[in-house]
Image (cartoon, rainbow, N blue to C red; front, side, top):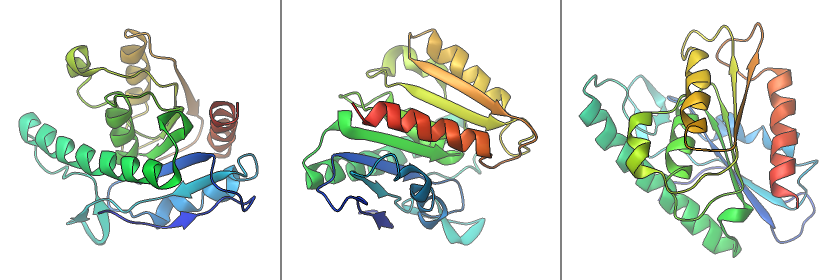
Length: 215
């Protein structure tokens, strides 16, 4: 079972919402949990969790990966994504069960590989979650959505225009592909930003999560 840091609701109440941070390649749950400090002011009854990915990362032994990025074989890559998705889904299910909540009380916040995972999982869950906020990521194998798409959660993708790791065009392509399936998706490109989260992207994320989780 994957684990990671948790920040309980600042209100001290039983959680009414859940935000799960999904970190990037070679990082760990501690990399994103600090974002909760920006979100919790608007979401006092929300519990924030940031699980460590299930595999050690060979490129950074101190970090983790959701799936190995070294293979260039699409079939091998896809098989590893399915394994990672199973791990993340089990974590989501156990978290919702623990707090007696449902997908409609849940939002995922991903960064880089974590955004790839968040998009993959959210679009294939039986029940639609409240929203997905993705930074600096991409939509993997959009051509497979024709047969795989089950849920259509609201999605906001944000990317830096100078990202050397994952080109920002990936976010624009994801928006185009998902709009073809009538997914409620928006995007924002932060200027003068590399593989990171800029101030404007953070503010958009705060507003998006607040609008999706507080009803």
